[in-house]
Image (cartoon, rainbow, N blue to C red; front, top):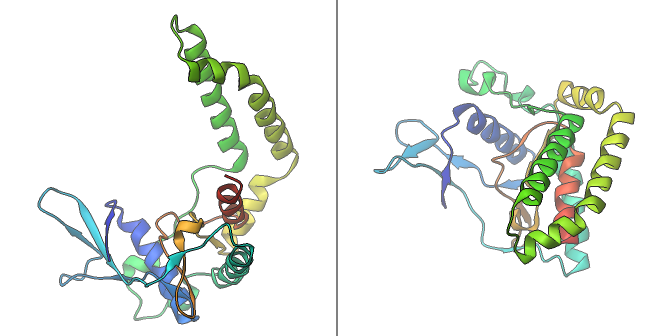
Length: 220
């Protein structure tokens, strides 16, 4: 399958390193294919970049089937065990310089992310509140805002009590990698296997974020 991709050489080198490592461990992943010039990305006539990837004939995880939800979570546990010390087995003389230098880590920790989201909530609230004419959606948002804002502040306070930054730094130092988008869309049930696809957001980080991503979609 051919997918559109951002022109980020470091990110794509890292994600392909992760997938290659997982494939060697027996996991089914959408491993990329380099073009004739030896590059991962191919630029089309209008300037978009594309990546050719191996794909699987299957269907997305059905969140209405509890058995498939259990299987998806068991699969994630195995995947997380496989995504530790990624790249350590690739630091051989034959490994490319591009892959050796690739190392993707988060730009912010949990406290910083929550603080940013809370500031965004306040900006949106203040903007809508000062509008002279408000539609039904905006009026509904204003009426429910304080309830959600209090929950956000409570989450921030709890995060401040936990040494999130220290935990995150420890996970990164241990080489733990999260998928970055572990939702039912990216879990394919094939004939006799579960394939994991779309690693574009994978990075070294706390792997518990993948559990959150999956459960959030399940609750929606």
